[in-house]
Amino acid sequence: MAGHLDEFGASRMVPRAASRGQLFVVFYVYVVRCSDRTLYIGHAENPQIRVKAHNDGHGAAYTFKRRPVSLVYSEAFHSEGRQSSESGN
Image (cartoon, rainbow, N blue to C red):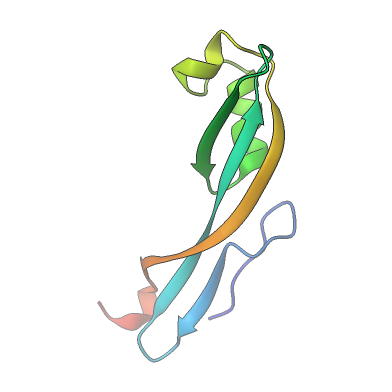
């Protein structure tokens, strides 16, 4: 099973072992700088969309009164945990 690309061209899921149907899920740890110059650390499958949510007032309570926030760092990680529908599990 091939992974698919999100709107930023990043692979969201890639096969781990076709025989077991395991997939890696890409998620990001991100850091935003708030308007009061404090930093907030979070995680999301898409940091750009999450930063927009923070700035639209739909993010964490911490960032709500500290808008706007700007993305200063993100790093991708792989997490196991989703079974493909082809695995029969």
